[in-house]
Amino acid sequence: MHIERFYLKCLSHASYIIFDEESKEAAIVDPQRDTVQYEDFLKEKGLVLKYVLETHLHADFVSGHNELAQKYGATVVFGEKAGYKRPHFAAKHQDKLYLGKSVEITVLSTPGHTPESVCYAVRDLSKPNEPISLFTGDTLFAGDVGRPDLLGAKMPAEVLANMLYDSVQFLKTLPDETKVYPAHGAGSACGKSLADVEFTTIGREKLTNYAFKPMTREEFIQAVTIDQPEAPKYFSEDAAINREGAKTLEEVLAHVRAMSPEEVEQAMNAGAVVIDSRSPDDFALGSIQGAINIWSNGQMANWVGTLVPKSAPLIMLTDEGYELEAAMRCARIGYDNVIGYLNGGIAAWQQSGRPIIQRQRLTPKEAFEKLKNGALLLDVRKPSERKAKFIEGSHFITLSHLEEQAHTLPKDKLIIVHCAGGYRSATAVSLLNKHGLLNVTDIIGGIDAWQKDNLPVVVKQAEVCAS
Image (cartoon, rainbow, N blue to C red; front, side, top):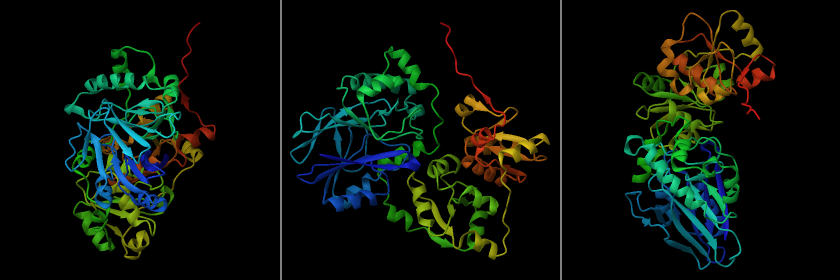
């Protein structure tokens, strides 16, 4: 038996191919929407795709299960409570599937993150002394468990947390050497304290995972429901797409076309949103008034899904040659509404005689001097980041709520935005520009660079227990 891991950094998403080396039969676990990397691997190894194993209806990305089933005739497998609308195998607890004669896959019902969540326990029958490989999806991560609060009014977090408690107790009964392969690592909004590892073990989680510590059911429910990060708005919509089965990427990208500056301007006037996926430095050198800067070298899709309404047609402003990649990044989370891209990029916009907006980004020391002269410092990080450390006197609006609170900011003074490292601050500047606040800039390198320059920061002191 062989396991191959595929990691999509921009969504902190791990998927896997399991295959039997003798029969060449394979299964893919929790695939991302763009499937070319799986197709290449299957072809390279001469594999036959038998199953697409889904641990649950994913909320944070659109799955490629429908496309893979269409291309290979593979059987899609969900837990029996998923309600998947297309042909599939609705797996019950302890159902068994096989790859060849040697690879046994046992379905384990582990509700809690969602009602239909399952894990897949995989063993090589030809090597009985090897540990079980457990594909846990969003039920169990390294250092965390799946958040139980994503269904909202459909099912209260406390009800799902109660289910999750039982699932965790069950997983704790598995051998300590069981290898755990989760669907996400650090940076995912599917939990609050995920670690970045290729795999963990049940034994390691017993030692390090807060949710595996001895506690009552009531204590567990409280522990897993408090301090969860804010979920992006698109999460509930993606789960519905995955239940129906998404369009193929080929269908989606076929509608993305090159657009002239005039066509882009007309579309913007009609409500289209321009996403400038270039770096913050390139954005500062010149962009379109009203464009939102969400750099592709980061969690671009997640921020598109957080900040941009799904109803709006999208137009991409990218580096040359990156146009379709940017559209695909949006499609990964179900934003199939990219209508085109600015042909020729920002240079074409300028050559057409249309105005651009420019600004000078500031070093921490330059920002420090301007703050002495009355500039307003705006922190757009997450509440948990601000709780750990902040710059005294700074104003706080987390980026996900900036647009709705932009009207509260002054128009008569310079606004200097900062985040942790300079990615989100550039996005914040573009949002404020979009709302008519033009005397805005940001700090290169964010609060991390500010600290490195030995400028003052208020750091929360670690709590010390009296002996």
